[in-house]
Length: 370
Image (cartoon, rainbow, N blue to C red; front, side, top):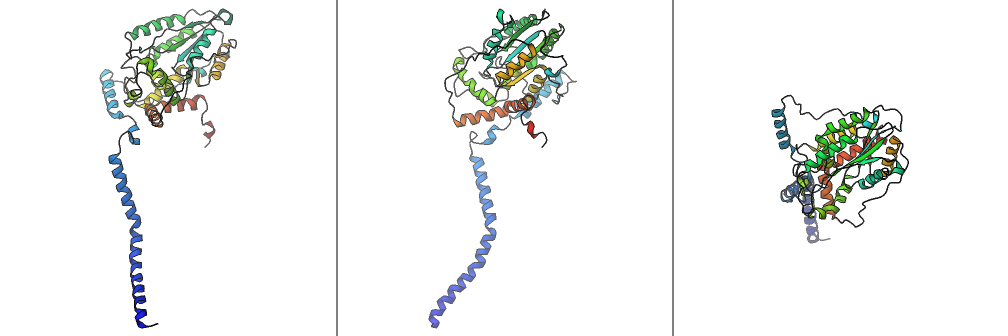
C-alpha cells in the first residue's frame, strides 16, 4: 500500500479516537439532561392544565375556612364545648341484652333512603297490615321536598311536627303481643339534629316490655347517585346542574347523596351539611348514628333484610314485592361517571359505605390476621 493511500486511513482513525471521549461525556450527562427536560414538561403541563382535567380539582373541600367558622360559633355559644370529633362509638343497638328472639311485641321502623329499593320494603310492611297477615299497623307521614316547578316546598317544618306527633302516639299503648311498623321517608326531621327523638321512641317502647327494631337499607354510593338521575325531570332539573351542589361542602341540590340524606335529609337550601363539617366528621357521625340506633343494617340485600326482621319479630313469611323499578336505561359518559365518583369520595359517601361493609357485612375480614 502506498503512503498516499495510508494517510487518509490514519486521519480517519484519529477522528474516531477523538470522538470516543466526546461520546463518553455525552452519555455521562444524558440522564441529567432527560430529567431536566421531564421536569420542565411537568411544570408546563401543570401550569396549563384546565381544572376539569386536573386530578387536584377533586381533592378534599377547602375545609379550613369552614372549620374555623364552626369553632368560632361553638366558642361563642358554649365556652365549655369541646370541638373534638373523637367520640367513642357505642355498641350497636342489636347487641344490647334483650333475651332470645323472636320478641313478643314492639315497633319495626324503616329509615327509607330514596333509590335503595325502599318502596319494596315499605310495601312488604303494608302487607302485614292486612288482618290475615297479622293486622300490624303501619305508620307514615311524609311529603316531597321539591315540587315539579323545581322549588323547595314551603312549611316543611309542619310536616316534621305532624310526623313527630304521630310517631309519639305510634309507639305508645302497645298490647302484650302487639307489633307495629312504620317508615321515615323524604321530608322528615333530620336524624343528625333530632337524635333525642330516637332515644325517646326506643325508651318508650322498651318501658312497655317490648322492643324497638330500627332498620335501614343502603347500597353502593355510585349506583345510588346514578339511580337518582331518573327523578331529575320530576324536579324541573337539568343534566348540567345535576352535580353542581356537590362542588361545595354545604350546597343543597335537588337530590341528596346517601350519607347526606341519612344525616340531614333534604329540607331546603340549608338542609345539606349546615355546619360545614369535614367529610371525616360526616362519616364518623353516620357510623355513630347507625351503631347507636339501628338493629338491621343491610347493603342492597333485601332477602337478608327480610330474614333479620322476621328473626326479631316472629312474623310469618311473606314474599317481598319488587316495586318502583326503573326499566328505562340511564346513560352517562365516562367523564360524568368519573366526576361523580370523585365527588362522592370527597363528600364522604364512599368511606361511609366502606365502613358499613366492614362493620355489618364482614367486608375484608379475611385480612384481619395480616
